[in-house]
Length: 353
Image (cartoon, rainbow, N blue to C red):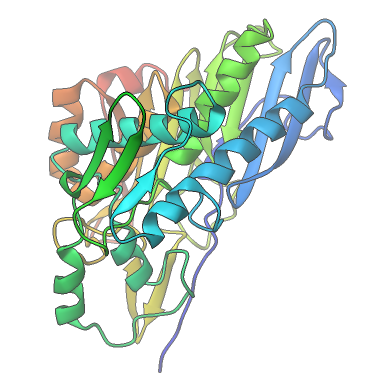
C-alpha cells in the first residue's frame, strides 16, 4: 500500500525567552518588543530591547519581502526563477549599483558558492532539478512511486556550481549556465541570509539587544530581557513529537544557530521513507543515521548552508569537516535500539545549559 506524507517543515529551533508567549507587538519586561510575520513559506519572529518602544515591523516585513521576491523559486518573477527558466542565463540589470535586487541575489549566490567550494560540493545550490524530481521542489509535490535511475543519472549532468558563471564587463553583468537543465536553489541558505539581513537592519536602527528567527534559524546580539544571553533550544528529532519538544538548550550571544534535519520533511512509499536532503554526489535522498545537525557560526547564512552540507555528508564526514573548519556543531543520530545518540564539539558544549 502506498503512503505519501509530506510534513511541513516546522521550527527546528525554538527560542525560549520569557517573552515567548506574548502577543505581537506587545511591550514586555521593560523595553522588550516582540514582532512576528510570514516570509519564505514560514514565519519570522524578532525580539529586541528599545527604550523608545519603536515598532520596526513594517521595515522588517518590507526587507524580507524584497529578499523573497528575488530568491524564491515559488515566485515566477524572481531573479532565480528567471534564471532557472532560461537555456543560457540572464542579464543582471542592477549590477552597477547597490540596488537591493542585485545585492540580495548576488550575496546569496556568492555565499552559496563559498560553501559549495569549502564543502567539496556537499552543499550545492544547483541541486534544484533533483529536488523537483524527488517531489520537494517548486513543481507539483508528488511521491516517487517508482525510481527511474536513468532519469536520476541524466539530472546529475545538470548539477554543479562549476556550470554557473558570472561575467561582468563595463556595461553589463551576465549570469550564465552551461546546460539548459541547470537550475539554482537557495532554500538552504536564504532563511539564514534573511536572518542576517534583519540583524543588519536592526543594527542600523541602533538596536543592540535582539533575537531574530526565521523558520527556526536564529541569530542573537547582546542580552535578553533578563540581562542574560538569549536562551534557545534544539528540537527533539522526532516527527511525532510536538514542535515545542526540545532535546537541548543553549545560551546564544552574538552568534547564529541553524539546524537541518530529515525527520519533518519526507514522503513514504510502501514503508520506505525518502527524506528531503538530496545528495549532490549520488542524486538520491541521503541515507544516514544523522537525524539533525545544528551549527553555530557568526553569520546565519553560513550556519544554514553548513547544516545542510553536514546532513548530506553523514555523521563521520560531518564531524571531521566541522573540526577542520573550526565550526561548532551538535549532531543527533539514531541508534540501532531506536534511541538518540548525541555528539557535539567542545565549543558547542560550553554553551549548553
